[in-house]
Length: 425
Image (cartoon, rainbow, N blue to C red; front, side):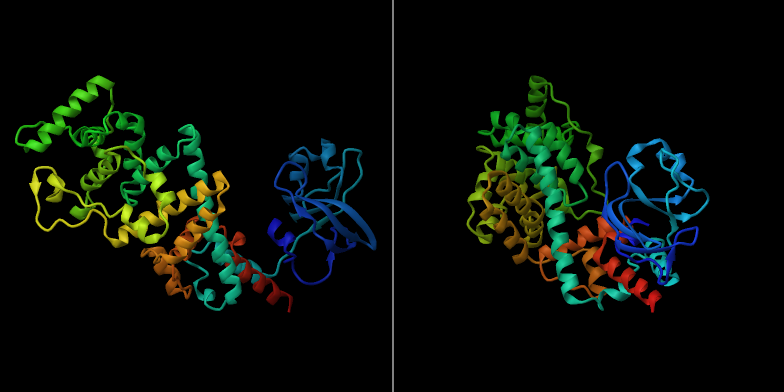
């Protein structure tokens, strides 16, 4: 009802109050998202007399009294009560009758709304996306991309507060989480939070100790050493000592999801890569900020493992032809989900807007993600040529389509407005 009123999508024809007086809406007013009447400063002409004030809406007119508005002076400024069902008159606190109107919409609008909001297909507007004006789509995609970026930055801000303004800690936790690549995000973040940088830095001069802390805290050294290789036994013994020394509590091994994962996607080698970044002191955030271009950023994540993990995907099982920990596509994902938000968030926090521009430029230069969301919209005629657009489509799917917030979506609004206009012809 708010949506219909705000966008003037009511049914065509003369509007009247419930007692038959003609109504003309000059200005629907401003939507109020806080306490008080639903719309402020509306202008409504009732039976030739202009009223300026607030508008309140209810599904049932009797909700006015049920909500206590008849005893609340804040609602004495209401000039029109708009309802779906007229089942009771409404009064101000002094007993004055308030003009009341039933809000009617066209059948074509209702049909379109129900197909969007209640439809069971994954993308109920798929048939109209390709017919939308290009400018409408372009503006909406750009806004969605920044919405998603700002949501990620909000998360960085909460981490920044948790870690007392340390951007390296924020980078460490954010990078760790994104090394899970969706499947193991939560497990990687739990590990990072339970193994803080301040602890790792105490032992950053020893790669073995850093690895022991990470694998041990990950719950991946819980097996007995019997039958295991020398490297595992060394990690196991080192972690036992450090766990006792610092009273550490590892996460459970069951937190890691490995079912149906390819060996290269197991967490072991990614933990080894994380250990490489910590070895000698974790300073990745500074290196990200200082990197002059995409090529330099990519080089930060082109880590070549040596020693044990150059020939293993997991403990005690040598493997041939073990490639890089992160391929080119995986590095793209890290740049999209870790580097771009960090650059943007750091730029906003420090007032260095050259960094926020670099973050956006990076997303525009990167290839789009390859996932079911991008494929869904591509089939519907919404092309995706870069990572900024693929991020926008993910935001659209998760925050609007899946939540059925079609009336807040530009695509849904275009469809509903067209249906309302059809009902007026």
